[in-house]
Image (tube, one colour):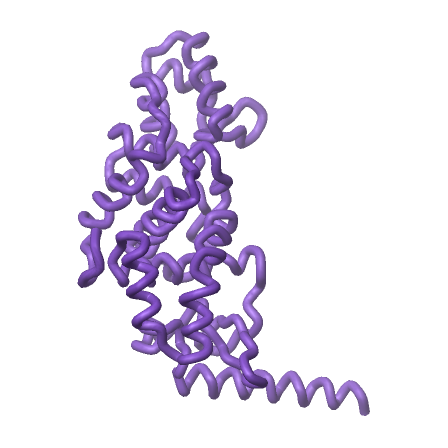
Length: 272
């Protein structure tokens, strides 16, 4: 997908499949069926899987072991297994995980429900951006660490931080840079922006937000002696958040200033 207008969910699904197809090593039909089954249940045992798919126990055990070696599934507890996001992607590309099951599979594997307001468009855009970046780096599904969303978010953040985010923080907007980065990844600007949005949101698992206000959660950056908040979450979902992560949003700046004033006042009170 080239640079253009907002993509529909169906277009994003096709984009994700297109991006990841060359990055997913071939798997046989039995393993693909197992991934399709694993996407529909929270956890499973080799015995239960064999019974429900009509496989011998020995075949189920061998195939689960192969899947675990590729980190398509992981041990959940005791003899139970659960699918990873790698398994979700591999099954989706193989065609044994349908579109509806794929989205729910990714949400569950990455535990995305712990983040507020993560939309399917953001998840699919993030996967497309992540896949393109892995391709640029010469990696594939097996040779990358993405079983935790924070790991995947760090990959995306590292790629875009030096160009897009730096321009955003310094200039307050980054349309030209966003377009350039999107073109380099053969993606739409809306896809890249939504991918970055989820990346920042997920990084809360590694780096807690600097400031939490009534309506925002934000990282604080310092440039030229000025503090610049970049919103991770915005309850209001205003145009500033949709276009520039809140950079230039008067309400965000006012809330951050008030919060920082409370912090400073509290520190002065402790010294008295």
